[in-house]
Each structure stands twice: as structure tokens, then as C-alpha cells.
Image 1 (tube, rainbow, N blue to C red):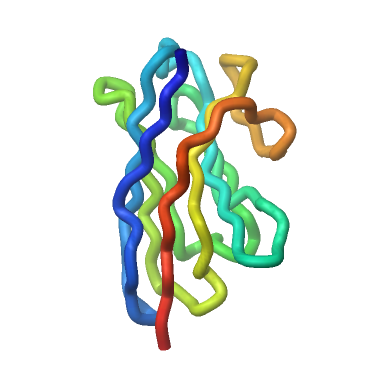
Image 2 (tube, helix red, strand yellow; image 1 turned 180 degrees about the vertical axis):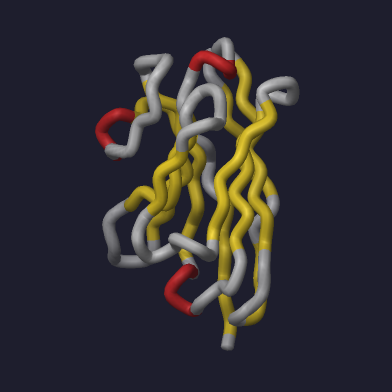
Length: 125
């Protein structure tokens, strides 16, 4: 079955950086776009960034453009989220996700079926 395991979250000061990783198994990783989502307390889960199966295509939420970078290593079945210039409002649980349908970059929440357990990112002032 599909397993997604995130790591790399933690506590960081505003303006700092973190890199999240998500190791995937159970599918031919290089056939699937991947996504990073986040959910803050009292808010809906939202897309942060998505990447195409090859890594050539990416999509970002407006709130993180220019600060976050999504990438992947298909040899390691791993997708990354490099987060920089972190703001208080970036505090959330971050999830990686894999869609049910392969071969395309997916940017909608409803396109994703498989989810990791989440990793907490807390940005302090």
C-alpha cells in the first residue's frame, strides 16, 4: 500500500529556513505528481506546492511564491519542500500527498487520495 512519511518539521524563528522531506512507497514514484499541503488551526487544508512526475513542472500558492521551493529525487522516491523567509503565518501542520491518478501535476486538494501523517512547522517571532 501507499506510505508517505514526512520529516523535517520543527520550531524556527521568523525569517529562518526549514527543509521538509517526504519518502514515498507503494507506487512507481516517478509516475506521479506530488503535493505539499498545510493546515493551520481553525483553517482548511490548502495547497502549498505541487510538482510534476518529472519535476519539470511546479505550482505554488501565491503566499509562498519566491520563498518556498518544491523538488523531488525520483531515484530516492522523495519529495522535498525547501522553506525560506518563514513567516508566523506559515505555522501549520504540513502534509505531503500523492494523487490517485498518475502522469500529471495536480494542484487541487480533491485530486489527492494518499496523505502522510503530517509534520508540525512552528514559526516564532
